[in-house]
Image (tube, rainbow, N blue to C red; front, side):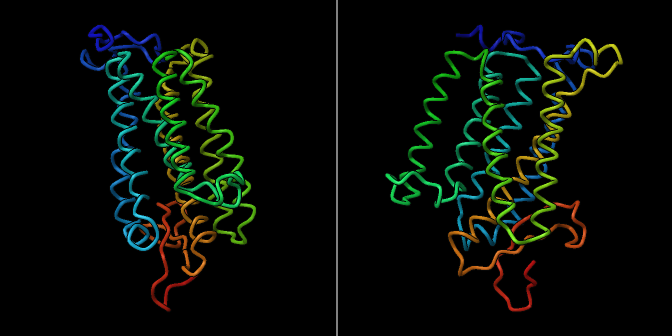
Length: 266
């Protein structure tokens, strides 16, 4: 068991050369590129404080799990240990199923669930537990299996964005889908075309994957949080806002729940 904690015990080794920048960190760029997972979730917790109080306090579970993903990924790339790999992949699995159980549209539930989100969430937890066991048994296929989870998520996101009669939502949806496509491009190229990228002295695409997949992930959660209010709490009025300036759409998006008449609905 202790051997799984040893540096280099993971069968996965990304394109970046090991111990180039530091004798203590195996993949330096892949490690520090997780910085957004530490910086932005606390900001999102603050921006979503009204959403958590009025709509669903479980929204903060998503932001906490994103921090866990960043910690696990940084540990994995710093050590390339098998335990680090499993922690990284399992953290991604659980944040996916947490968001899935919280945001999946109730109108698309199987009929036998009778629109019961608690029962649906229990099913998601059960699937996550099965996935956890399978991930431990066959860690070599985990990364490719997790990549496939993003495909139905993006399809659902595109469907929900199209249903929204809101240009600002449409633009954020395009931003989210674009970030996801760039992230997948970086992941696949780093994994399958390492020699080509190393030949031009840029074996750091996996570090870019961390940046773009975080952008895609948190913006998707923002969008689904917005859709959840519109569909399940229609008596509340959701507003898509940006921080630090609402007219700067490259800022940090969040959902404001309208409580005062002077709040603009967009």
